[in-house]
Image 1 (cartoon, rainbow, N blue to C red):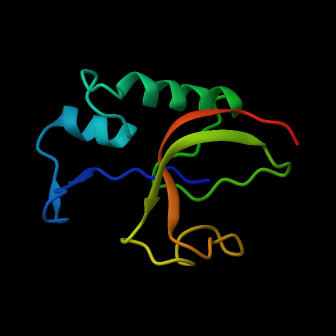
Image 2: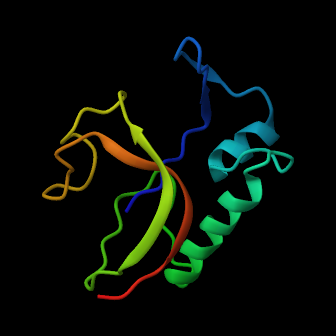
Length: 116
């Protein structure tokens, strides 16, 4: 698992990366959360908090390596289906566990512990 954290924003119309303009904006992007006034803020925050709880606050760190767990952790997730045109299939992910397709669930809007 690796958190997707990027201290740049992407202009959705031109798909060009732009440097962030304020510290607040950088912190918001780093946290992967929209502004607190955004309608989806609470759902995304709750999903982030649920992940922290499931992993006992041992979250992957931005810019760090992938985190692997010796025992699989079953989870149920909800979110938007997203085709990542910025990363070709088989390129992103830890060696031996790279997906064969570029589909992602992004953003994750709900996550809870499942069962094996």
